[in-house]
Length: 387
Ligand code: HEM
Image (cartoon, rainbow, N blue to C red; front, side, top):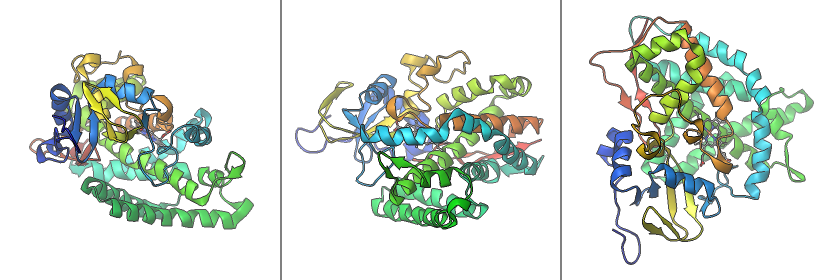
């Protein structure tokens, strides 16, 4: 119930043990019980597909300027967002993404070959996390010496976000900036001899009539890193777990690789790798029967909207013939994921390689996976057996 004055009464607690124990089930229940729900931690969470789409399509009322820290381009609104977005999209053009396939395949194949066979392995630690950091660094032209620091950084960033510790989050962002500042410095010093990669390209980019500032470059790279590392790790865990739970589908995909793109998008619709993103209202809005004043925090719950029975019927029914436009996996509207084609390529290639090099990907009876905690999704530990 809304309070007359001041903050509304919370409708739920996103960090309660019950919610964190099974995020997707808890969000399903919220979508049915209280589809626009207030909590101190997340502000107003939108659980229904229609409400999330409405917020995405009305970027004037639902602004991305959620933080006072620079965040290029995700924390920006038009017209500022438009200029930076154009610049960023150039780095994810289809030819550049396609050119990455051979290297992505080699990394995936090497990691799949190195997996121990016929014994228990933790697929997240031994495969998913390593894969995400290796392909991220390969795409950006970053050295292998950054793999370990980046893995530690992502973990710390998640812990601070879950704790809602903004001072710590700011300190962790600064730590990232240190790694990147070193990389940029080396490239600036090398001048024309700098390696021909995306990171060097960014140093030469302009927005309007001036070069990007150091802070802007660091922010863009931080956004890509956050965008990629956590989500790709989550995706690989979710996909392997689902294929192990559904051996018939696993067999079908082994024989028909061309079904993989649609199958991957559909599995990740049901089991979200990215739980939510934020907005802030710029004017009062009526949504889902609630009145939300201007200046309120909004959380778009991808993990719920993509399972809305009003759009998808039974949310757990795996179908290859769904309308891709309804799937909000990579968002929609002006902030739609610029890395979507890269992510799709990486996931297709890695699952292809894993299927090519194995006969079976299986769960281990009696060994339960450990779910990752918000804001992460997927698994933090996934015991599996590969043969
Ligand atoms: C499976 C992996 C991925 C998923 C599920 C995913 C999902 C999303 C979603 C839902 C959004 C929209 C956020 C919003 O509306 O607030 C988004 C935005 C974004 N993603 Fe991704 N993403 C993935 C991979 C990547 C990769 C590989 C990159 C880059 C290397 C990337 C970079 C970004 C950036 C920079 C934005 C902000 C765009 C803007 O505000 O205009 N993402 N992503």
